[in-house]
Length: 550
Length: 67
Image (cartoon, each protein chain N blue to C red):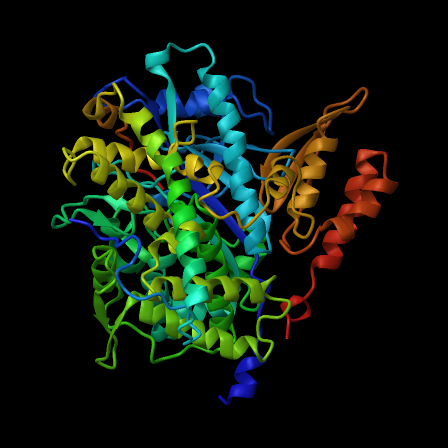
């Protein structure tokens, strides 16, 4: 395929979602099984959302729970949504937020936050911090009347240091063709994606003291998750974790799963939870750019690691960044060299307009990416930390503490506590101290974050979801079930049984404010509103070629 | 064992290839400012560790595995 043909291949705007678990427990309470059950439920009880089922969160058997979609692996549960009744320990009491269209629920005793679908990586950072702000309010409320030595604690991390890991998942809209290329047709695409991710921990790692999962000892790692990845690809998420996850749930309507020309969702379980804006931006922004190249057929076959899994472990265990990994060519590159090469590819194609209308604010992402790699190349760690790369900022904090307290070493429990408290959501969180002190650079404004705490993105279907949840909260309409791609309403008639209506919102790029606002403005009656939105839905049932950017 | 070399031993390089002493001074000033702002973290660490039982905290923070 010549370069022109490659560059005009189908590409979809790189819409992104996220479902992120939190560490939660009662500080000072030492129980054999932990206190996550009690903590997660107390936190979720403080977050209002729909469907509204009073008391339901206490009884898993009678709350709406996710049902695996066609093709999903029932043995691993699902990260899908509220569309059935039953028991699923990985999806308890999910509630969607009328404020911003995101949701919260409990996954295996972890409070979990899902941001609404966004198009821009900058919006991702703002929406993620907005969800953290919502959880912080819930934490304050849950702790209001608790004894001082038995407060709930929330950690924005991915491992407890006791051998347990929990996820920080991203979801990217890609074409079905790209999905098939990665998992069924072109093995080098899978290897290239894993290679990109393995080297990207340089920018996205959250940092971690020590090891888990019976790995050989090392004092500090770049990635919290690296120890837990044991295979290249797979559908499972809770054991034998894969770098590239093959869970195939489109969340774009039931029909999309079997439509060879339809959209797909890449479920990315690889990344750490980010607090610093830089790491949060890079894990989405650079993936948007890389996936766009992949979608265009612009995979650089030189930048493929011979063994991405061992490369990941090697890179993670060497914060000095000297670790090299072997490419299939036999060449050996550090993570910094790998990322620099990927960046050069991206810059080359950016100049050709490959990312236009596919990755919002791509030029800013590329500029920040390049500037940060230069800071790494210059060994200017302070500048890297200020950019907001979590693992560097955390390491700097720990080493300063060790400088100031000579009794501390890497095996001291106090050092592990600093590791954990870096990610504390409460006022004792170290990250927040650095942010408040002006050390950690903010890539989005407080106003941007505040906006997403109460408002949905205007350029995805999240806007209509939020507005419908608000409208349905009054009058004779109840929200019966909610899913990312549909909502069912229970409408009470004057003298009859209630009727149910379901609105399908299969197109995540549709139902934007620009499309739906006129319908909301013109329809006071809820039935009329759904009629109008259904016509929009029919209009959105367009071919993939029509919504792809070429 | 220290991984990071704060206030680098290596010469500063802004990526342009220029060895401009004015630029270097600015970077040194920026680092000094950064160092002062890091002190906010020092205080937070001292507060966190003061009087707390680190081992008890770590035991209590045990989680269930998830995804």
